[in-house]
Image 1: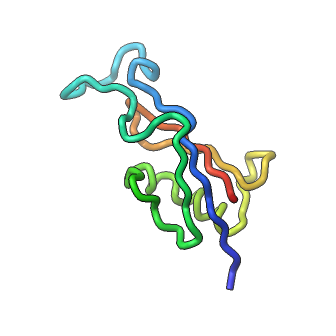
Image 2: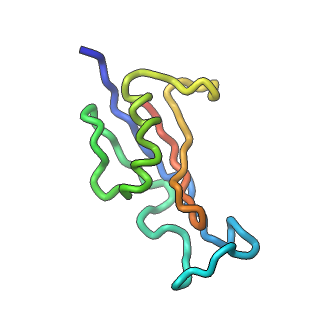
Image 3: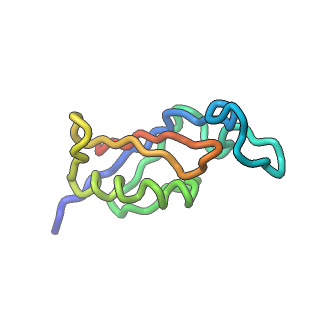
Length: 104
């Protein structure tokens, strides 16, 4: 059986639309701030079962899952000097959330 590791996900930073764009490319139905689902510095742990942590956004999970899986199976991303880490963001183009993933 292949060894699997846990992966820690840390919310590095949430951005509001005004931090991303000087002028919004679209008009939101209601005013938007930074993502309210997370807090900067918030941490989640992905177990060896690779299930999405409770309270995690399913869209963000879908985006980062490939990196989570790579780290959980002992792989590394070749564009970082550090082993066992990845930096990913969700796909919300107006108010992205940046995540740090670390094999533990």
